[in-house]
Figure (cartoon, helix red, strand yellow):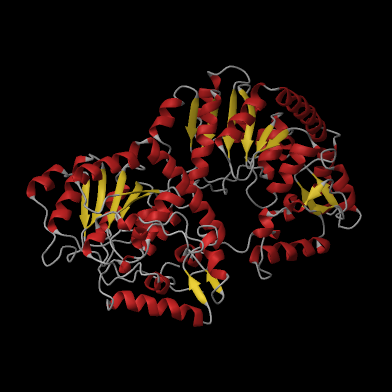
Length: 619
């Protein structure tokens, strides 16, 4: 938008500047309040080519002409997303041809299978040094500052030295991209005493895979020149910025990063080591740094939503549409049906797979279900009127306990090694004092969700046993901050897997924070333990709805998990009135499950019918 108004800036006599002193006499702080959609802008925040005294300046006139050409375009495509720049985009939409926001590009491309899209890669011809990724792997989470001034910026030797000592004096780890041509007219060489000072905590590389570096868990923030690609990649990675804009649109980007989006701090143009060290310290450990990190994560989440398939129906209330026409299903909404309906793609593989499998149910010889009649009587009765014979044989774990050990084998299906030391830990805890947490063998969480769950559990001050699979966090290892581990010492036990039925049946366990997978749900019912539900996908939404609304033995966590709600629901489950009511209800369901699987019970009888009628062919 700033470039579009270059002609107006010239016509108003604002640029070219009258003399060079306008660069330093406060003139650049003149407010510019008349460009639609641009908030709190000063002359210094507009694209830098206005900073000239020459009316024939090549760049000034080039941008003026290009700004005018925008009105003649068929369409304008921008690497941004609506929520990031809503006001200026709305203003542009009233005066320009159709505008298509398609960013962040890197995130958008990740939505397409590799077979359908090609890598957009880096536009730089510099060779990428992947050693830096190995170096980052060896650093603690959030302990590294990434520094890169892009592919075009050049520094004076004095600026290089000021940045170098500012980084060194911060005492933090840093990865600094030093292009061979970063200095004007000479090689970028740092003094030997500085190299000695940063040994072990500073890595210098000539170029890198920036998106991978920014997404690395060791990286806490980004010292950048505020080029747009770097800015949008930092937003995509959820990393706050220290900005040192150099030219072109970079001052505008910096202004928005720091003042409108709240995810950055600006270094003065005349860079000084003291300010560099001060801002790094604030970003890494200060209160403002924490606030910036929080906001950067929020912008990242908005960017993710913007680049996913059109999800307006996921947030505009459409999912609360009642579904009252499926026989046997009570009080259902669209959001309570198996999650594969949540797609905009008519060719979605999982949607069509479930559709086909649902149709095949009518052709089956029989249907065997791990449930018991009393738990799902209405839906089972409805299914019985339209489907082949149905045999309810659950809960399987309780049914198997009716047979001698020599005649039955473990029904566990996970290949993860069980850590039985958690049972010894439970033995040391008081009856009903522990919440058990396990999201199953398939669910994955983001690092942000992991941290919210972690602090929610920690803040309850209750004991908990948490199963953290090695692959629980999408794309990275499940690593928790040291301060969290110190906080939960003695009352939190972390394990990679466990014998779940034995854990749920342990008298120390009060309740279960679960993803609402059906096996986990049935095992919790069998153990008489109430649930806090965080459904992930598949049938888990349906299971959660029944657990919480029909059977009265659970409470649901919002999909966008927040530590405050985790803390609140765990406290309610452990000590609240609703928790007591849930405990009473689930014990009653446990007793019904036991009766169903004992001799003469519905599941016990159905199991023998399966043996006789289906396997042995006897009627």
